[in-house]
Amino acid sequence: MGSTSDWETMCHAARVLDELEVSHETKVVSAHRTPQRLYDYANGAAERGLKTIIAGAGGAAHLPGMAAAMTHLPVLGVPVESKALKGIDSLYSIVQMPGGIPVGTLAIGKPGAINAGLLAAAILATSDEALAQRLKAWRAAQTAGVAIDPE
Ligand code: RP5
Image (cartoon, rainbow, N blue to C red; front, top):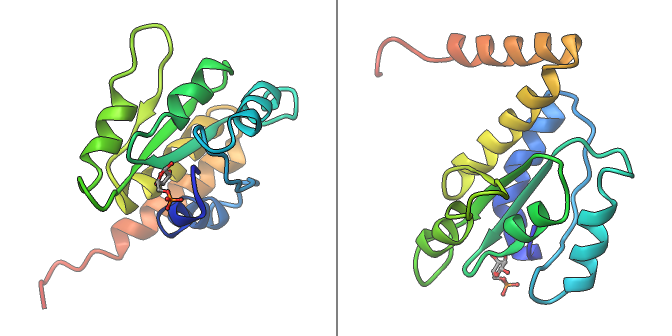
Protein backbone atom coordinates (compact mmCIF):
# COMPACT_ATOMS: atom_id res chain seq x y z
CA MET A 1 0.00 0.00 0.00
CA GLY A 2 1.04 3.55 -0.63
CA SER A 3 0.84 4.77 2.96
CA THR A 4 0.26 3.58 6.49
CA SER A 5 -3.02 5.50 6.19
CA ASP A 6 -4.14 2.90 3.62
CA TRP A 7 -3.92 0.07 6.16
CA GLU A 8 -7.40 0.80 7.50
CA THR A 9 -8.67 -0.25 4.05
CA MET A 10 -6.06 -2.79 3.04
CA CYS A 11 -6.29 -4.75 6.30
CA HIS A 12 -9.47 -6.24 4.87
CA ALA A 13 -7.50 -7.88 2.06
CA ALA A 14 -5.04 -9.24 4.60
CA ARG A 15 -7.88 -10.54 6.79
CA VAL A 16 -9.39 -12.49 3.88
CA LEU A 17 -5.99 -13.96 3.04
CA ASP A 18 -5.56 -14.94 6.70
CA GLU A 19 -8.97 -16.62 6.68
CA LEU A 20 -8.02 -18.57 3.55
CA GLU A 21 -4.58 -19.44 4.97
CA VAL A 22 -2.80 -17.75 2.10
CA SER A 23 0.69 -16.68 3.13
CA HIS A 24 1.31 -13.04 2.40
CA GLU A 25 3.27 -9.98 3.42
CA THR A 26 2.11 -6.41 3.98
CA LYS A 27 4.35 -3.47 3.08
CA VAL A 28 4.14 0.29 2.67
CA VAL A 29 5.63 1.20 -0.70
CA SER A 30 4.91 4.70 -1.98
CA ALA A 31 5.30 5.47 -5.68
CA HIS A 32 5.82 9.14 -4.80
CA ARG A 33 7.65 9.15 -1.48
CA THR A 34 9.72 5.97 -1.77
CA PRO A 35 10.24 5.40 -5.52
CA GLN A 36 13.41 3.35 -5.00
CA ARG A 37 11.54 1.06 -2.60
CA LEU A 38 8.87 0.56 -5.25
CA TYR A 39 11.49 -0.17 -7.89
CA ASP A 40 13.21 -2.73 -5.68
CA TYR A 41 9.96 -4.31 -4.52
CA ALA A 42 8.35 -4.73 -7.93
CA ASN A 43 11.52 -5.79 -9.71
CA GLY A 44 12.37 -8.37 -7.07
CA ALA A 45 8.85 -9.70 -6.44
CA ALA A 46 8.85 -12.69 -8.81
CA GLU A 47 12.40 -13.68 -7.87
CA ARG A 48 11.42 -13.67 -4.17
CA GLY A 49 8.63 -16.11 -4.96
CA LEU A 50 5.62 -13.81 -4.80
CA LYS A 51 2.77 -14.95 -7.05
CA THR A 52 0.37 -12.01 -7.01
CA ILE A 53 0.54 -8.41 -5.83
CA ILE A 54 -2.34 -6.43 -4.33
CA ALA A 55 -1.55 -2.74 -4.57
CA GLY A 56 -3.78 -0.27 -2.74
CA ALA A 57 -3.34 3.48 -3.03
CA GLY A 58 -5.36 6.67 -2.93
CA GLY A 59 -5.46 10.02 -4.70
CA ALA A 60 -3.05 10.24 -7.63
CA ALA A 61 -2.59 6.51 -7.24
CA HIS A 62 0.37 5.49 -9.38
CA LEU A 63 1.42 2.55 -7.25
CA PRO A 64 -0.49 -0.30 -8.95
CA GLY A 65 0.37 0.83 -12.48
CA MET A 66 4.03 1.44 -11.70
CA ALA A 67 4.27 -1.93 -9.94
CA ALA A 68 2.64 -3.62 -12.93
CA ALA A 69 5.14 -1.92 -15.23
CA MET A 70 8.00 -3.61 -13.40
CA THR A 71 6.72 -7.17 -12.93
CA HIS A 72 4.91 -9.76 -15.00
CA LEU A 73 3.04 -10.96 -11.88
CA PRO A 74 -0.69 -10.24 -11.74
CA VAL A 75 -1.28 -6.87 -10.04
CA LEU A 76 -4.64 -6.17 -8.41
CA GLY A 77 -5.30 -2.50 -7.73
CA VAL A 78 -7.45 -1.23 -4.89
CA PRO A 79 -8.53 2.42 -5.10
CA VAL A 80 -8.38 3.70 -1.53
CA GLU A 81 -11.05 6.26 -0.67
CA SER A 82 -9.55 9.73 -0.62
CA LYS A 83 -10.80 12.65 1.45
CA ALA A 84 -11.19 15.25 -1.30
CA LEU A 85 -12.72 13.15 -4.09
CA LYS A 86 -13.98 10.06 -2.23
CA GLY A 87 -11.75 7.70 -4.18
CA ILE A 88 -12.97 8.64 -7.66
CA ASP A 89 -9.48 10.04 -8.25
CA SER A 90 -7.93 6.79 -6.99
CA LEU A 91 -10.23 4.71 -9.20
CA TYR A 92 -9.53 6.68 -12.35
CA SER A 93 -5.79 6.70 -11.64
CA ILE A 94 -5.73 2.92 -11.32
CA VAL A 95 -8.31 1.70 -13.80
CA GLN A 96 -7.34 3.56 -16.97
CA MET A 97 -4.11 1.75 -17.77
CA PRO A 98 -3.02 2.03 -21.38
CA GLY A 99 -3.14 -1.25 -23.29
CA GLY A 100 -0.11 -3.43 -22.62
CA ILE A 101 0.29 -3.15 -18.84
CA PRO A 102 -2.78 -4.51 -17.05
CA VAL A 103 -3.93 -3.76 -13.52
CA GLY A 104 -6.97 -5.69 -12.35
CA THR A 105 -8.91 -2.90 -10.68
CA LEU A 106 -11.32 -3.54 -7.83
CA ALA A 107 -13.99 -1.37 -6.21
CA ILE A 108 -13.20 1.71 -4.12
CA GLY A 109 -12.38 1.09 -0.47
CA LYS A 110 -13.20 -1.83 1.80
CA PRO A 111 -15.23 -3.87 -0.74
CA GLY A 112 -12.36 -3.59 -3.19
CA ALA A 113 -9.84 -4.70 -0.58
CA ILE A 114 -11.97 -7.71 0.38
CA ASN A 115 -12.42 -8.68 -3.26
CA ALA A 116 -8.74 -8.19 -3.99
CA GLY A 117 -7.98 -10.77 -1.31
CA LEU A 118 -10.58 -13.14 -2.74
CA LEU A 119 -9.41 -12.63 -6.31
CA ALA A 120 -5.77 -13.16 -5.38
CA ALA A 121 -6.80 -16.38 -3.66
CA ALA A 122 -8.81 -17.44 -6.72
CA ILE A 123 -5.77 -16.84 -8.95
CA LEU A 124 -3.57 -18.93 -6.66
CA ALA A 125 -6.27 -21.59 -6.35
CA THR A 126 -6.01 -22.41 -10.06
CA SER A 127 -2.82 -24.29 -9.20
CA ASP A 128 -3.55 -25.20 -5.56
CA GLU A 129 -6.42 -27.63 -5.04
CA ALA A 130 -6.36 -27.34 -1.24
CA LEU A 131 -6.75 -23.57 -1.51
CA ALA A 132 -9.55 -24.05 -4.05
CA GLN A 133 -11.39 -26.17 -1.48
CA ARG A 134 -10.87 -23.53 1.23
CA LEU A 135 -12.14 -20.83 -1.12
CA LYS A 136 -15.24 -22.85 -1.95
CA ALA A 137 -15.86 -23.41 1.77
CA TRP A 138 -15.42 -19.68 2.47
CA ARG A 139 -18.00 -18.85 -0.18
CA ALA A 140 -20.39 -21.53 1.04
CA ALA A 141 -20.15 -20.14 4.58
CA GLN A 142 -20.91 -16.68 3.25
CA THR A 143 -23.97 -18.01 1.43
CA ALA A 144 -25.13 -19.87 4.54
CA GLY A 145 -24.79 -16.66 6.55
CA VAL A 146 -27.30 -14.71 4.48
CA ALA A 147 -30.63 -14.64 6.30
CA ILE A 148 -33.74 -15.06 4.18
CA ASP A 149 -35.79 -12.83 6.50
CA PRO A 150 -34.78 -9.19 6.80
CA GLU A 151 -35.40 -9.00 10.57
C1 RP5 B 1 -1.31 7.90 -1.47
O1 RP5 B 1 -1.66 9.08 -0.86
C2 RP5 B 1 -1.52 6.83 -0.44
O2 RP5 B 1 -1.82 5.62 -1.07
C3 RP5 B 1 -2.66 7.35 0.40
O3 RP5 B 1 -3.91 6.78 0.03
C4 RP5 B 1 -2.69 8.84 0.08
C5 RP5 B 1 -2.50 9.70 1.29
O4 RP5 B 1 -1.32 9.31 1.95
P1 RP5 B 1 -0.94 9.96 3.36
O5 RP5 B 1 -0.78 11.43 3.13
O6 RP5 B 1 -2.06 9.64 4.30
O7 RP5 B 1 0.36 9.29 3.76
O8 RP5 B 1 0.00 7.92 -1.91
